[in-house]
Image (cartoon, rainbow, N blue to C red):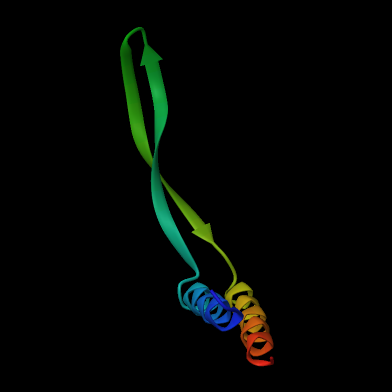
Length: 71
């Protein structure tokens, strides 16, 4: 892959991170364990980031893209 393609991929990732600032995921947590009996509960977790991180990644992708154009 050349630098133009890498730059476009980085810009796309930055755009997605700006538009979608987080996601939720579910983990199982052990509540009680008595002998062979185990009780678990689903726990909702959230991963979030600032939209400014996505903007910064887009800027880095733009620099990579522009540096690939100059030959």
